[in-house]
Image 1 (cartoon, rainbow, N blue to C red):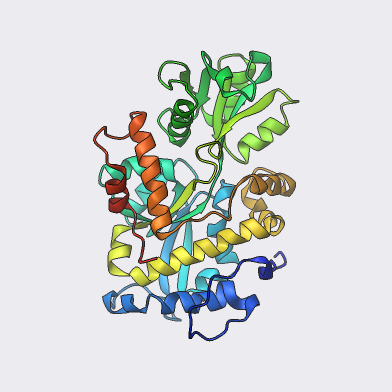
Image 2: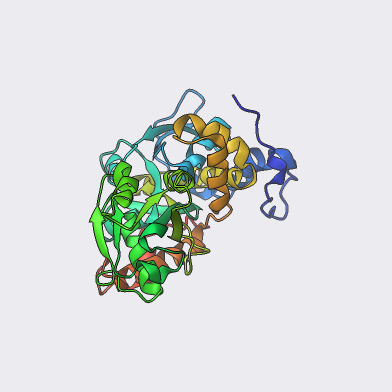
Length: 356
């Protein structure tokens, strides 16, 4: 068990007037829990009485996450450091360990009450009527595009024109992200590049063989591959490239039934993940040590990856609504979403601000 992180470095939310002063050290996982839940006390009357609870009366929830993704470490940290407990929740983690499709399946079949994953994999199912509400963002940045210098790729996005880009999922989050970013930089994602699917473990080998010149994947895989490439692999783009340099990447989605039947617990879950995400921002070394048993990377590499991600950016409420609307418009413009999509209307349907 690692030493607990120093919570003193985490910025305090504004304390409502008339509230009892909160000790700084206990603020994030103790005082904020009480203050936050007090602010949603009006939801209590909406809560059915037969919801699953443990012996302490805490609401029992199952949260789906991918234990291979360092960017989703807040889900683990909130359990490790008792943040869920302080917010009145008893959370079981369910590792879907594969594509986001497995995450969506876990929620749709009732195996999980909520899940965390890449927003670009949530949006299309939500357009098709998937019964989930997005309630919080957790961080920005986790997808990167690497290209081979030996095959003419540089950090100039224009060097991708006429090249073949490898993906582990031809219709996944990496493809959607890259399509928008290429269009923003003047390239046609359907004409100026070719896409080719490979199993994720074979992407780097496909580059060496010349079958592709670049590929998109998530960290820590891309970080390690670039580090071990002897200087050949160069980063061309990431989902923190403009116009996404201040945009959320992964989000917390709650089942429609959880939001409708137990908004108090949905609020508590949202606040728990946001609090845990802050730990990734201010205590990356501690976070990396906790997460290391789940990752195929060293603590040093995990720390480096966390420094490249924006775990201090976790929008909720209207801020999350605004970012989802931006994504919806961009994905519509590259043909991923229906051409008649109205971004603000779409965001209003799929984002529940929980009165934030």
